[in-house]
Amino acid sequence: MASVNTNAGAMVALQNLNKTNSQLQTVQNRINTGLAVSSAKDNGGIYAIAQNMRAEVGGLRAVTNSLDLAVSTVDVALAAGDAISDLLIEMKEKALAASDVSLDSASRTALDEDFKALRDQISTIVENAEFNGTNLIDGSSSGGISALANAKGTNTINVADEDMSLSGTILGLSSGTDIATQSDAAAAVTAIESALTNLNSALSRLGTGSKSLEIHKTFVSKLSDSLEKGIGNLVDADLAKESARLQSLQVKQQLGIQALSIANSAPSTVLGFFR
Image (cartoon, rainbow, N blue to C red; front, side):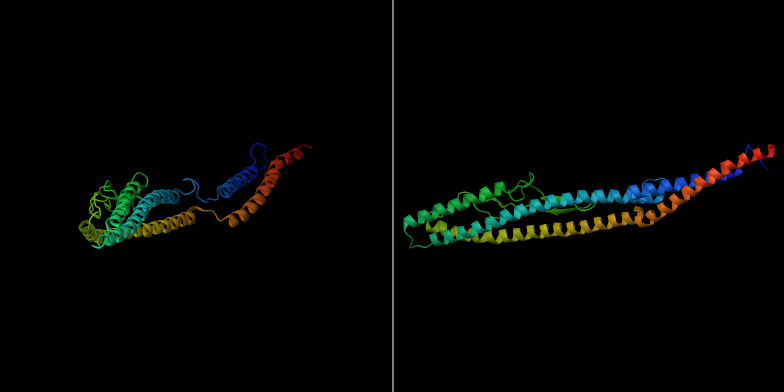
């Protein structure tokens, strides 16, 4: 039936053209964003999974920052402990020399001055072994330092503090320790040897804690990379395929416009019936 009121051909052509335009818009959006699933309307299930994984990655970034902070704090403590160990070795050398009964008073006095300077330097090092307000070796950080271990914040890695101050639990030296006499020097040698033994144990514990933090930091980095790769597998667009599809849809769009133009001109043939 020929009719000017209803053009079925134009309706079909328009439906096909609208469908092509919709597909073209989707492809252009994928090319613009690089994502096959950029919002929930693209694929609600995949989008929800990807968002959960993105939250996990964000949490792991916080874990990494926490681990970095803890590692730096422990490394500062280790550096200070190494310096204290060197000072104790020098102090033992001075004390051993001063314990010689044949030493004259002038030499003993000079050794004592050097000894006390080294002793006081330990206190200076301990007071300044601080990172971001935390000092693991001055006895002020009760319980040590904790770092986040997972993105939920339910697990932590702890490194205990070590009191390396002169009168602390590690060194056990008095702030007034000197080698002014032969007997004082002999006692100082014994005390320093004990302090060195305790200090080496403390440094070993700190080193183990620092290694644990570094190992977990490496694991968190690999886990984060794996999650990001998984997100990409879920939502990233294959741009090579989308580019080919874009060209195909552009041709279909032009053909659809041509088909609609032909369909729209069909009612004009009715005029031939009245000539």
